[in-house]
Length: 117
Image 1 (cartoon, rainbow, N blue to C red):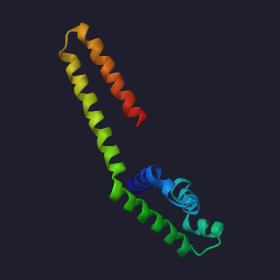
Image 2 (image 1 turned 120 degrees about the vertical axis):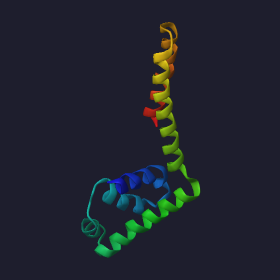
Image 3 (image 1 turned 30 degrees about the horizontal axis):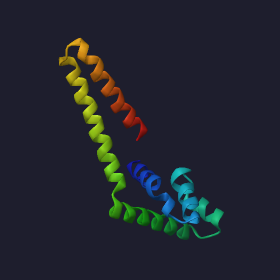
Image 4 (image 1 turned 90 degrees about the horizontal axis):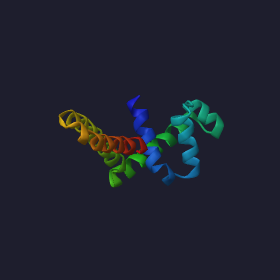
């Protein structure tokens, strides 16, 4: 499962850099869960050819990530924001009631940012 999540994230960030043909094939296998045999029939190629095409796409996407690191930065920022939200929640308990409202607004803003990512 973790491999599919990574493939999906890499595709979300770098999929537009693949050719249209590669994008359609990759989406069919990774997003729509088509088998290599099904893709091979659709593309009129061998099952090995379908497998090789998806592996090349994976390799390209990993190379883009290696050079740009956008997925890693995204995951790091999301985790930092999550931890910040936890700290804000802990801090809220130690504040007087009149200051809790401002802290709650900051925590809500933090959560909106996480949701938007």
